[in-house]
Each structure stands twice: as structure tokens, then as C-alpha cells.
Image (cartoon, rainbow, N blue to C red; front, top):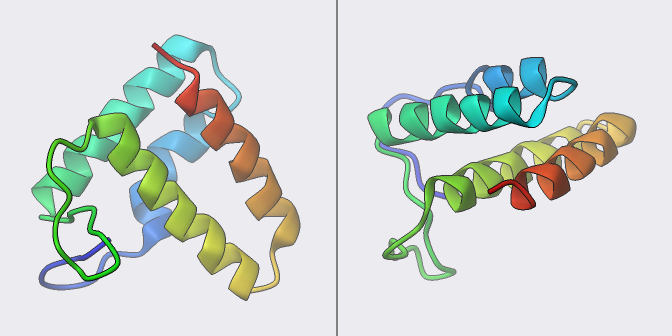
Length: 97
């Protein structure tokens, strides 16, 4: 993921998902859409290993990539339990239609 301009804390971007994680699938899907809109508004793109933007990335894939970055950040901070819980959320999001 590449971010242009000033940094925004990942926890701020993930807030809608974190708040909806215990809700029904409709609430989670609404949160995915809010996070995807924030990602787009900030000009954040999903990139390959060489830093080239990947074409055709869906909102869900972009949100899952951002969520993975946030989980890695939590692991580096020693917050393994939180990271594992977000892994469950990621699986739930991936299964939404």
C-alpha cells in the first residue's frame, strides 16, 4: 500500500470496521464501504512488490489490504490478541457478498 501526502493513523481509517465488527453483515459491509471511500479520498493505492499500483482492485480487496497492514502494525506493537481478532474480521469481510 502506498500513501500520498500526510500520514493518517491506520487506527483512524479502520475505526468504522472496528465499531461494526460485532454487528450484522450489513453493518460490516457499510463499514467496508466507508473505509474504501476514505482510502480513495486519501489517494491510497494497493501496490505490487515493486510499488506499482495494481489495476482493478475492488473496495473489499483494498480494505482487506489496509486491514492486513493494520494487523501487522499491531503485531509489531505486541498486540497479538487484537491482531488475531482482526484476522477473524478479515475472514468475515472476505466472505461477504
